[in-house]
Image 1 (spheres, rainbow, N blue to C red):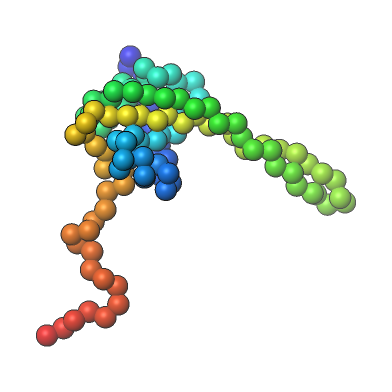
Image 2: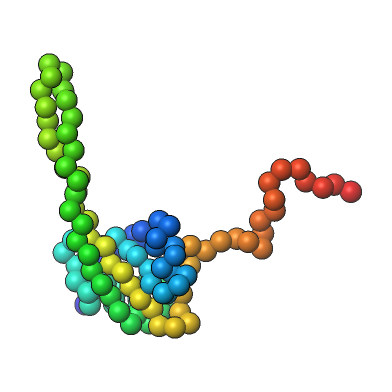
Length: 112
């Protein structure tokens, strides 16, 4: 397929934990995409081997607001689709890359 997908990494504590323990990365994908399209897009964009893709549809939350005059208005957030992508052992994506080697402790710097 020549269709390219917009993959937005889902950055949360749970997603970070899964990337470390299970080698699974979470992406927000377009709602009309399917598993094979997501697998091809991740493999092409990050040069990794995808072993499994799980898709989750998340319904948007309903929001209530009160306008002038006490009139209530009901709206809702957009629906999203999340893709949990498991990679082959040894492959990784630098979504949560840290710069531990270059980090210096904040605070007083020693000068000689």
